Image (cartoon, rainbow, N blue to C red):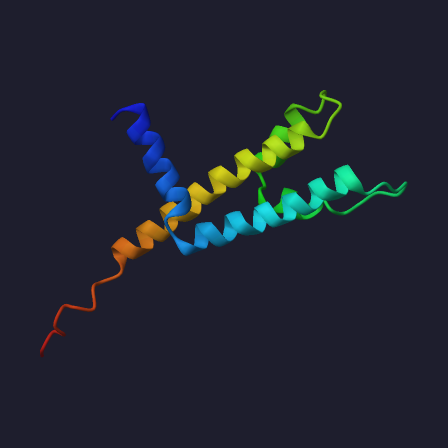
Amino acid sequence: MSYSRRSRAVLALATNNWLSRCYLAAVVLTAGSSLYEDIFVSHADASMAYVVPMLLTAPLNMLFTVALNWIPTAAPFYLGVALGALVNSVILGAVVRAVRRRRPSSARPAPTA
C-alpha cells in the first residue's frame, strides 16, 4: 500500500462518520476559543480556556505538552491538540467502522422456528 493511499485511508477513518466530525468540530471550537483568548484577551489571572481542549485531546496532548515543555510558547499545546485530535478521531472512526460491520443487516429475513 502506498503512502498516499494509506494517508487517505487514515483521513477517511478520521472524517467519514458523524461521530468523528462532531468530535473534530468540538476540538476546533474549543481550541479556537483558547487561541482567541491567548491572542486578544489580556488578564493577570489564570484562565481555564486551555482545560477543555486539553481534556478533549487527552492523553496524547498531555504527553506532547509535557515532552516539549522546554519551548517557552504555546506552540506545544496547539501542536498537541492537533495531533491528539487526529489520533482520537481516527480511533473513533475505527470504532464506528467496527460497530457497523458487526451489526447485522436489516435486509435479511427473520429466522423461522
